[in-house]
Image 1: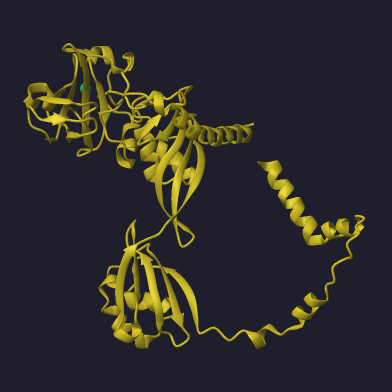
Image 2 (image 1 turned 90 degrees about the vertical axis):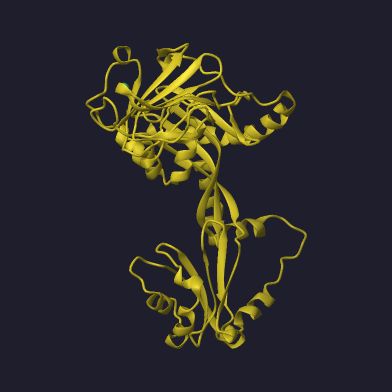
Length: 409
Ligand SMILES: [Zn+2]
């Protein structure tokens, strides 16, 4: 990577200093040297005589907290005379802090158009001065590029993604993609590392929104997992499905819940004595079913407080206790990741937390000691297509990992 860049720079320097041209004239050639007379002629032409002065110019400004619409429009170079009519346009009244607005403004201070991205999908365009300004909305056309980033966990996944400039939505997708293998609330360790290849949608040349994770590698406690996106799922390099019958963690992974769990909690106890796992989390954090199944119990049960028990296939069941609120009814069907309730401290709980049990044939077991069955791998007929798709992505990950290790040396 570095060498290639250096070579490119060297060529640019050679070209700029005319060394390339010198080599060319030195080379024996039967072709007469090209005459440069027309070029000299062209340079002599006065450009200011040819180019008319601009009748409009383009400007970009970000709507700031505390901005009034009038002040903001004036910052875009729009004349006071236009403000009254523009202030009546509803789309402009809905501008929010942080939105980047582009305007093409005539020399008379009247905008030819004002445009901005109203949400993650639509672009608003205000124009038509003659008719008193009107807004139209259309689906934005994005230019999608691939971004590659790598980072090391020092405190939390979000701190690591912030350091590398990785969007939150990508960090959360990572937690989802590897959620069958890694409990992102409890398993992360300082020194864990990850690399990710993802889509970044650009609008008007600026990155505006992250898309999907295309491939990722995560090293957790010395164990490395890889994922490649293919036909709506995530698969390991050998085509095994990363989605497991059960998620490792019953708590939704978010900026709030992830920071909370790293603090020491007074009720943290040894698994054997306690037959379950406690997740310290703020009251109201979403609790999700770790797998598909049916609600076997939803209500109050002495020490458990508000509790939901989900029966899964085979002899598996899961228990979610001390909930502030139960979100399902007995007998209801739930799928993996469906909300069953919210974190609370009902029953015998000294602080807000989720008490989680994984049971086999009614006996609480340590879920970490159980190999979780996985969803179906890539179909045999799709394997060649999968491999052709996965190979360049794997190469990108290899490059990232190599450059990351080189930096550490
Ligand atoms: Zn507990």
